[in-house]
Length: 277
Image 1 (cartoon, rainbow, N blue to C red):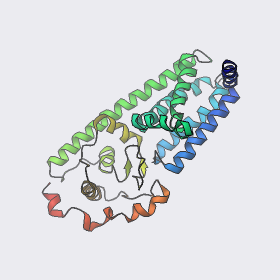
Image 2 (tube, rainbow, N blue to C red):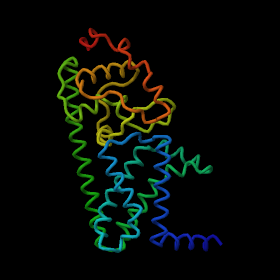
Image 3 (tube, helix red, strand yellow):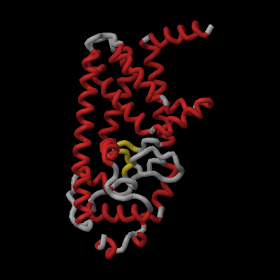
């Protein structure tokens, strides 16, 4: 009885249209769930483009994997494998383990959707591709992504070194660039980890900064609200042309976000304290 059911499910999944529909439903679920809970907060524009391309291709590739578009879909699938793997790592082992406890009520299954896609895309593009040459296009995309990740780590390390010099100068001289702006903006602009707690969260999700932080951490201390106030002061001082507040990623928490006393100037470190750091 069970074997027969498993065979029926397998035959159903082997149909390109069936797999496309299932992938579409699963992607719709994670998009809706993320909109409601904002596990990944608001992606930066370049990430939105990559996500849209990868999600669309994940839905359509079962139908296109035997057509002339197979090389292109396989290449994008390589990028998608890295994207879903990023999601798995970002959610973290702790909450993946917790998801097992909630499987019985169905909620935990949502966390395993990225895991399912990683498994599916590796199986369908690297282990058992419909067209053997498609494997190389998928693998080349993964290698390119790994190269990009390595470069991000290198660039972030340079920024960390700049921040260390910044601290040594008494927070007076900063090499202002893309990555140092992201580091200073951590925890109040840029979201760095999955935060399932109540309250407002940093609204912007920048994968480049998150990946860099995985390699080398946060070079500025962040142990209290006073540390965050000091960080906001530094950001306003060295990046005055940048916004320090955005629409909060948990839309119902905008009131808490905008009215948090952490934004009040009277709560910042006094200028003489800043000079003596």
